[in-house]
Length: 134
Picture 1 (cartoon, rainbow, N blue to C red):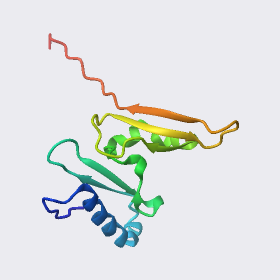
Picture 2: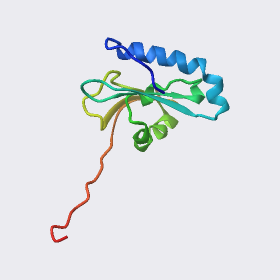
Picture 3: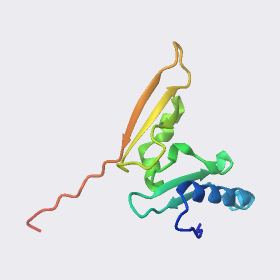
Picture 4: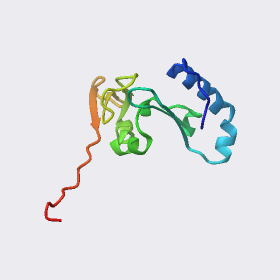
């Protein structure tokens, strides 16, 4: 999706306009079997903002995946955490390190009181070792 934005538009203004556009085209998206729409907001400085709208949420933003790079969002296995915990991201704004994400999780079926945990998920990519002889 491409939208024309003014120089003074805030991330929230862009997000609000995009949300309205996605909602007005919700039936078309469903008929095309599109399961998610990701909005990427580029900034002059810092990392881009990522906002993912998922079909099973009625094409509303899935806040768990906010500011997570879509191809890598599923590599940190947030879905597995969601089986046993109600999770929400700790930071809502732009993140300092795009490879580290923090979540507050409350146990869904607590037998003896509610248990809240703090999860840190990180993407670690190994570098290929180069042989100096090659």
